[in-house]
Length: 286
Image (cartoon, rainbow, N blue to C red; front, side):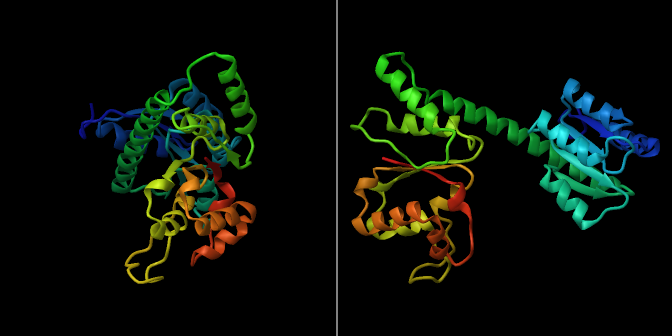
């Protein structure tokens, strides 16, 4: 148990013994358990074997450099935050490290307070990621399709066929047959399963509000628009949007949604700023 009431295991990967010892003393004084690695290869092996809660990673090392190690670690785990360190920091290096999955970037020489703030933020981030993943798994269990009848087997086969694609999927059937379960299954089996699943009950939204709900609006774009609103399509960026009861929309709104499906580029013109969210949304229509 640390001075902050939490336990965390931290790995330091740096070829400089002085940096390793300095970080070890700072972190152990705060009650953290510290592991040390002098090479990228050794560090990657420790991540795989020990699953630390946080990694401090030097960029410039002989052999496997920090960016190579970063790529290897992010393939091993997607919940362990990685703080990249460099004594020769450049904006391009920081951007590249962030693009490859680094949690943050810190320059040498290291400042104790900066290090401790990074540790607290990173450990909190890992905890939230882990909790979120657990909650999502629990939620998924409540939306499983259970059964082995010939009819369900055909439905599952269709899901497996549609899920890996980026195609728009139409799901139809009587009320209560499980269209939402199918939509969630397609999302769960798709390449975007880590993204959001955004469900919109089109029947529950007044006709005069449905366009703003779906496409969003900018502050001042019409009378009463006191704040900017992000639309459901944009919220579903890198995930799935499920439009439930789409037949209850007005024909005017249905025409606009159809336009988005047929010509995604038109969605850009529905907002005051450019966005590519329409390119990464899967649209599931009832």
